[in-house]
Length: 233
Image 1 (cartoon, rainbow, N blue to C red):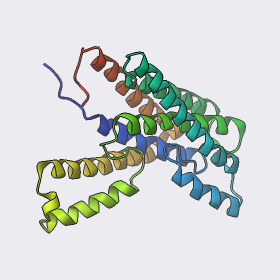
Image 2: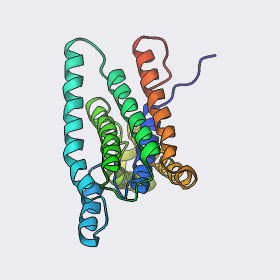
Image 3: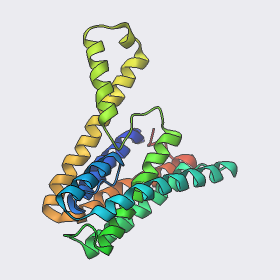
Image 4: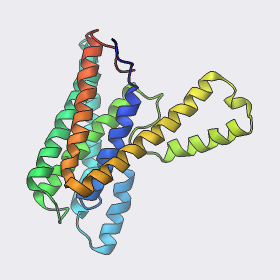
């Protein structure tokens, strides 16, 4: 019996929340999935004298570089007539796997600027930069899977328009869009909560969950392109 399709946004949103929370807890406040938080925690680290300043500073250019390389690789694959998403998601899964191995081998990291902590953190940043780039390149109509500020704002606006019966929410497309925002909040939040709970018990070894989810996405995307399955949508 054929399994129902799994929205790709569900898996990406879950992993966005999971990796960001696990990285924050295990790497002295480093945000692996987005840049905004690292500006904030960098400033806090500078003022309070806590560790991780150098890693947070490097996270920003590393993130930019990883996004640029993802774009370059995607363009090259497209120019050759090949689907880029399976390869890019595979690269993300590999980097998350390296992140996991570094974390469980050399962690826990009391000093966020220790060489292995820095290497592990920046590997995680690179992995999640790929997810950010792929979403902007191929899934731009979906809410972001790695940060919730804009998503939550739009959800609140649409919720009020829905409650008050505004014409903007009358169409089926508008309601689907509203539900996509709601789903993004739930998936990211679920990933964050599960990461926090599992980190409490097993530390950064919890990252194996993110590796498994990313690998699942890469495998299904590859099979989808080859016409073997339609389990993702």
